[in-house]
Length: 251
Length: 211
Image (cartoon, rainbow over all chains, first blue to last red; front, side, top):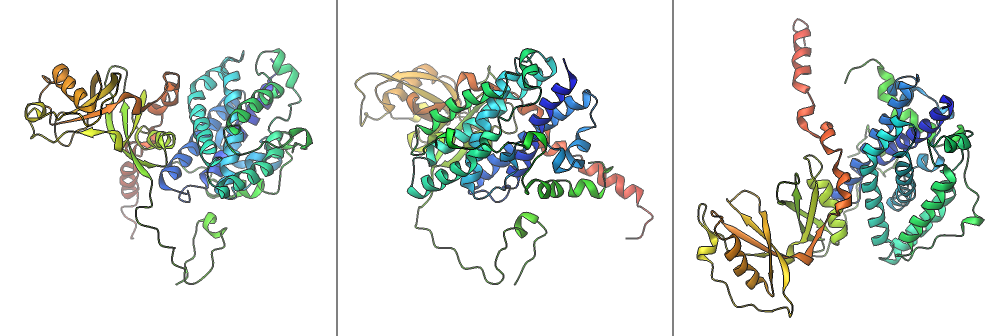
């Protein structure tokens, strides 16, 4: 297997998880109710844990250690999609992003748990249950709030419309796409997207929310190749602030 | 008084300086209803009472119970019941058997078909109610009578909870893997933080430095 292809796959997975984990952790202490604050924080921690697992696989392939990789790169060196780097906005936006992202993430984990590259398959199998809970959490809230009050429905609908171009950007193909599919390492973005559409539609159908016509939406691509919104670099600066004061500190 | 926060998340909110307007008063009793959560630590042990959660409905109660009560210890299954759906007997004193002092009343309502009920016993005050088994009955009272017949000899029993099985939201068999990694999450345990070791070491090293 081409190592560059593997690294490309691992970087996009790990960077998505790290950046979304960091964004979601910004809700800690600010959640709408205490129990939800705890739940969201706990899932943010899971995401960062997942990124560590994938950065560790990268380290085994010769990349720098996880802390260096996470805290010392610039925005242009990150492979995450643009959806995960957007600011949290209000809770409706964070919930919609959580819903759109995790419904894709679980499909990636299901595929990867059958990957021909055994180290990835092991990690995905081990962590899949956590992502399953993240999906349950997201779907439960969307089902409940998406069919509750007029304000909730309007807010979620407008967040959904705003997030969708970025969400479609999650499925930007790697330059090694075909190679990864043929080697049985990964099922590929097209397959993930088709399954994702079915799953999010099944949830949205139980609500008052409407999925806009996807054919009319231009996906926000670029993230996988280091093109990012203006929001990523400030996030990285803040995330690495403590690390950079003393990179050798022991915790 | 104006406060400056060192938390960039707070700074970003650009909160207005000066007096914060008081929050609108909430109507009395404007809060979520309560649910009771039961968790099972491993396959071979029964479900035991973990604690209550406030939630707008059963599904959300399940999410919250998962976070509140299965974050730290191994868990293979979680049950959630609306508090209102739990029938409680009077309490006996520690060491006694509540079934001996219990007068089972005539049922207020009865179902046409017998249905399953879950029975929970409290062995000692201050401990947690634990699932002892299931009976089939047409009312709470009949279920209690049946529980006495089947499980009444397991004294001491200081209190009994009776719940219709259909009122118990149970985690799915397929969802066990949601808890597979809980034992790895040592960072959730206070014991994982060896703070005292570090403080002692620091003090040792800085003994001769004036404070």
